[in-house]
Amino acid sequence: MKLEMSPNGYGHIERGKTNIDLLRLEQIAIVFDMAITELVNTNEKNSFYLASTSNDQSYWQVGSFESENIQLKTELEKHQLIIELKNKELAMHQREIEYLKEILEMHKNNMVVT
Figure (tube, rainbow, N blue to C red):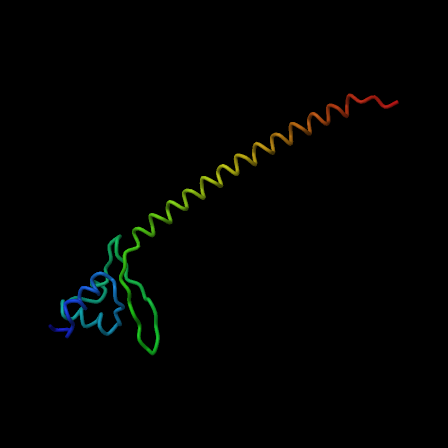
C-alpha cells in the first residue's frame, strides 16, 4: 500500500466519510500519476470542498449534494408558487379597492346638498 492506509481508510475517502488533508490529497495524486486538479475534477453528484482549516492544515471533504439540491429546488418552487398566489391575491384586492372607490365616488356625486 503506497499510502500506508487500510482498505477501510480508502473506502472512507471514496464515500466521503473522512476528511482529507492537502498533503494526503497530494500523495493520492502522485500514486495515480495525476495532477490534484484532475483528482478533484467533479461531476454533478460529487463535490470537493474545503471543509475546515486549523493548525495550518486544510481538510477537504467529498460529498454528494444531489439530494440536498433536489430538496432545495422543491422548496424554492413551493415558495415561488406561494409568492405567485400572494401576488394574484394582492392584484385582486387592488381591483376590489378600485371598484369600491368608484362606487364611493358615484355615491358622492349623487348626493344632493341642501
